[in-house]
Image 1 (cartoon, rainbow, N blue to C red):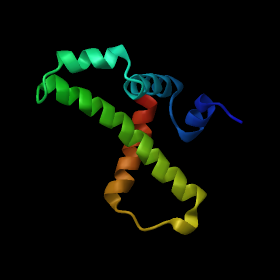
Image 2 (image 1 turned 90 degrees about the vertical axis):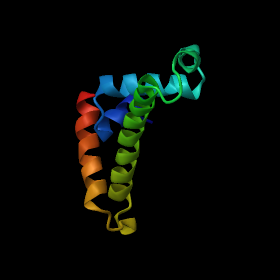
Image 3 (image 1 turned 120 degrees about the vertical axis):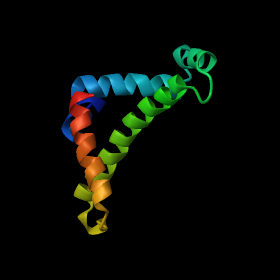
Length: 100
């Protein structure tokens, strides 16, 4: 069975981007002290708080885009017509995963 790194690279993630994304999101999933400290430092509604949320959403958009793209490849019979917007998000995510 291939490692997470190999799976990520095969899907189009640059190794460094995958590793930093995994580590960043893992800190939030496991309530690392790094994340808990940010709750104290950032005030809700502040520019810093929005930047923090934006960074997390950027990573998650890439992962979700790849999931949609790869699901369609694996199960073409399930393909529905998706909008140009979704297709553009997938293409931008592919570029971002190489140079984040």
